Length: 298
Image (cartoon, rainbow, N blue to C red; front, side, top):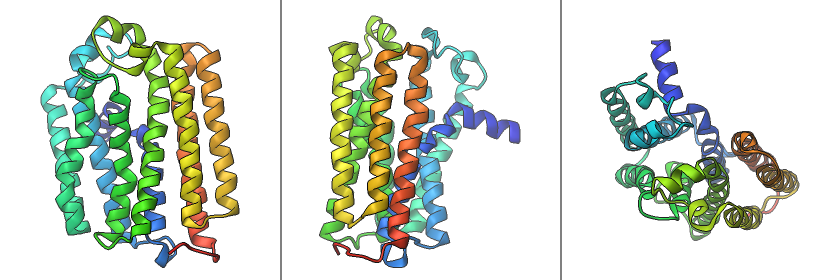
């Protein structure tokens, strides 16, 4: 059983959950501010289950529909499906089971989450098809990732959200979309030649690596502005400002690495620095919610 779980975790790159999960947990803390950032163990557990199931379903779907391209690409040829380490039936079963898990967790959260769960599944899986017909595939992936904080917020509050909370959710969601666009463009540099020769779309293919990197940097700088605005809307102060400066430094370093190092360094820029960005955001947001006793725009 442990071997199977390890294989499944590797198949869907479970470690990459560190990107979306901290933003979801940060949104959960802000939504539960009236309870000092903690919605209760039941809600917390269901949010975790929903998050893990949603990402597992999306990644499994991605591996399934991209298996033929993965087999042709030297970088991805050793993935589970093209390498024969997992059968297509097993992958489809995992995808369907995770999708059912998301719907079940949403059912036990509240009616709004339950009704929206099929929509969320369509959105997070649809990204995997976009590289076949649009250069803006990164935007669709960003929207899929941005559903994480929105879903966590609605898991806590249901339909009982104020106009201010809708604005806060919207600003945070746009920040996540821009963040994803930036680092997914950097990640797509690895497959520039392969995607170009096989008719797959991305902004790197459409604009060339240099112009795409400039767009990625612009997206990340605007993202920093949106995160700053989110802090203002939430009435955050010192801790959040320190975290925001760390995030800006990480993003600047990420682009320095992407521009001045070889493609072997892209995984450093992609995984480690962006994992740090999301972790820092969660830590300082939770700290502000728990310990702040000052002004709240509420």
